[in-house]
Length: 342
Image 1: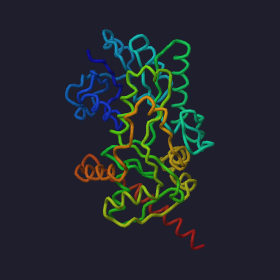
Image 2: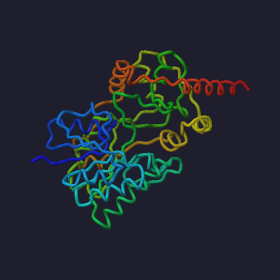
Image 3: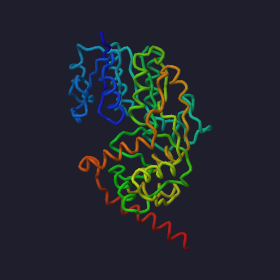
Image 4: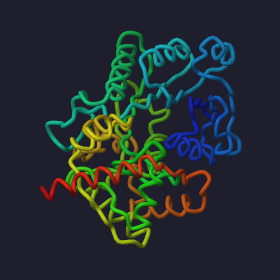
C-alpha cells in the first residue's frame, strides 16, 4: 500500500520538482492542496484538493476523512499559519515537513561554512525572522506535544523559469538577461567575490523526498543545497557564456544598492545584506547521512542553459520587461561613474 503525502502549495519552484519526482513511480500517493493556480504543471495521477489553506474551517471540513503519512508545507511564512497547521494536522499526519530558509542563519555567521547548528538570527530581513519564529514554534510543539515536525532550509533554488540573480527588479531576472543580450552593463553587488550556492530544483527534490517518511528526520532540521559554490562574478560569467555575449559587469557596494533600491521597493537590505551579500558554503553531511543519494547532478553551467532555453522559448510566460528597473540600473551605474570622476 502506498504512503499518502499532502502538499500545501505544490506548484512552486521547489515543490513542483518534488511532486513530479514522487508522481513518477514512487511509493507515494500524492495530494496537492491549493487554490487551483498553475494546475497545468501537476503530473498525471496527482490528486487535487482545491481550497484556500487560509480558510481553516473549510479546509478542516474537506480533510475530515483524510489522514496522511506526510504533510509538506511550502507556503507558511508567519507563526499564525503554522499554528493553523498544527490545529489542522495534529493527530492526522505522521510527519509535517516545514520549508524554512537558509537566510534564517546569522548574517554574517561566525564561520562561513554553514551547518544546521549555525545560529539563527537575521537582523536585516523580516522574512527570515518570521521563518525563525515559525521554526521555534514548531519545535516547541514537537518537544511539548510530540508534533512530528521536520525543518528544511533551502538556499537559492531555481528552475527553468528563472536565472538566479543578486540584483533584479520586481519582474524577476528577465530584464537583467535582456541587458546582457543588449551588451548593456549589469550590476553585480559588492566586488563579485563573495561565495554563493545555487541548487537546481530537481536536485533539491532528491534530498527532500529522502526525508519524507524517514523516522530519523522527526524533530530535526536539515539544509538542502548543491555542493557547488561559485562567486557572483563566476555566476554572471557563466550566464554570459551561455548567452554567447561578453560580460559587461559593474560592481557596486551592497550598502549603496540598498540605499538606492529600498525606496523603490526592491528591499535589497533584506535580499543582499540579509542573504546574498554574505559568503556561505553549506555543509550537507547531516542530510547525506540520511539520504546517501543526495548529490549535485545539475551544475550551474548546465542548469543555466536549461533555464535560458526555456525562457527564450516562452516569451509570454518568462520575458516580462521591467522598464522601471532598467532605468534604475542606468541611474545607479551613472551615479557611480560620475563619483569616480570627482
